[in-house]
Image 1 (tube, one colour):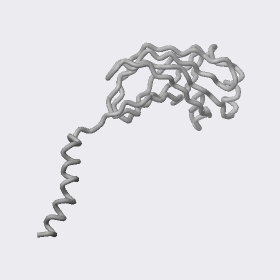
Image 2 (image 1 turned 30 degrees about the vertical axis):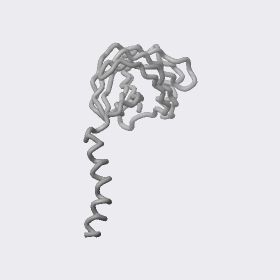
Image 3 (image 1 turned 90 degrees about the vertical axis):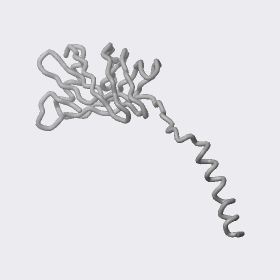
Length: 155
C-alpha cells in the first residue's frame, strides 16, 4: 500500500501540471529579415531580388517596403515597394525590384565585373498587415560576388 501511495504522490503533481497547460501551443511572432538574393544586370536595367524571411510561427503578410541599399561605401539607394507578399511560417519569399542601371554606382559595377566581392547593407523597414499591423526595422550586411557562368548576375 505504501508503494501505491508513493506513486500516487509522485504522479499527482505531474497530472496537475498537464491539466493546467491546456494543451495550447504558443504561436510566436518574430521580426522578419531581408537580404539580397541576387542582383542581375542586363543592358540599362537591373533587377534586385530581395529575400524576405518570416521567422514567426504564423503565416504573415508584409508590404510597404521602405528600404535602402548601400553598395560598398557609396550613398544608399532608396528602394520602395508597395508589393504585398504572404509568407508561411519559417520560410522566405522573393520580392523583385527593378532599377535603372544608372542608379547603381559605376565603380561598384566595375568591381563586380572584375570578379571582386562588394560589401552591401540593406536596411529600412517593412509593415506587416497580418496577423497584426506592425512596422519592423530591417538591417542586413553581407557581400555580393559574381555568379560563375552567369555574366551580369551577382549574389
